[in-house]
Image (cartoon, rainbow, N blue to C red; front, side, top):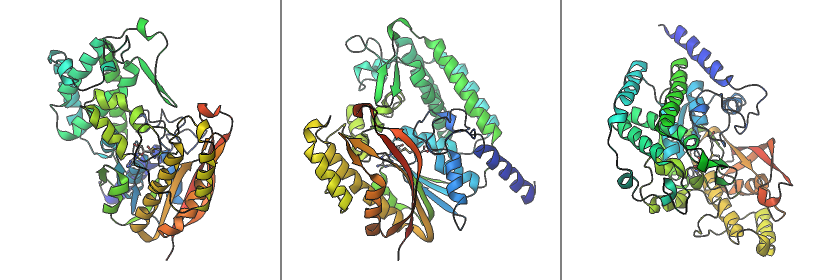
Length: 431
Ligand SMILES: C[S@@+](CC[C@H](N)C(=O)[O-])C[C@H]1O[C@@H](n2cnc3c(N)ncnc32)[C@H](O)[C@@H]1O
């Protein structure tokens, strides 16, 4: 194949990937990306769409050669960068999500994948597992008989999951990662819980709807077919190289090479605890072995939630932030957690670090683009764009653009009354 033919194929795959999202769907957070290639490898509700990444890139004066996302999530920025021909670097603290990202960035041999899938299916039923040993450090509620008559997985289900894990562990690193992601994507559907805006809840009538090993086999096969289809459909990317940094972006951003675009969506200061939301996958797939692992991950995430009480940072200097903290302190007794004012101060201290870290690795013509969301507690509105615009100059950045990408309702705790905004903010370096 000559280079012109290759470029044509790469462009064809790029256009087909970007347009796999329906035009009616919003291009910001993934409110309807279940059918979108690669996004459907795992239902990550907070993802933004490939189109958003491509729109941001197309809006730049010069084409970026290198794109950084310090809050990788499901890998939308990194995967789209590869299709666009820019080398991605991404940072993600959650080890399951980091594997999800890397599985999407890796190039596979179709025949080897098919071979290993057949191998898993051949051996899985014969593998002996002792789930009480494998999950010795996990919460009792992980599987039957659970705790106080509640459990997340019926016993035959967790046994078959453990068998799949053992079979997957016999493969090479790339395939291990990919098949773990395939298995991970089936877990909530196989469990007795569902996830909503604020956490995990037991399904209504779960006690009467028992699942068995065959449900696991069917779900694993269906999910593999989806993943395999996407891999076969998109064999060409203009760039296959990538860098994935696993860990806390507040520290690891200092290791990043020069970048032309730093594009990210951090957790919002809305008390949504990512560690909690992905707990089922983290325990069932063996990323967590003991309770300490859970705590360590919570410690390493941005201070956007109050699930654990952490060391509080001094709030960075911003007039709006200081006023907001004063207002929050005044209504502390009405807040559902008394730690919220400190969380909000620490959140912006973390964000100030991310802005400074982004600036430090930004090329002269580079841009920082952040998708952020407002929050509201006891009618005290957290004006995230305004506070960030006041913090940016200290990081050597200036806000040059702000527009609303979507409105969202405030949380159930707020009575779902006030409409909150989700914003795209663009910064350029100041010299
Ligand atoms: C809103 S999601 C990003 C979604 C992403 N834009 C996408 O399209 O999939 C925020 C991500 O930041 C991650 N995160 C939170 N704190 C972090 C930290 N300190 N370092 C790195 N990643 C972090 C969370 O695990 C989560 O995956």
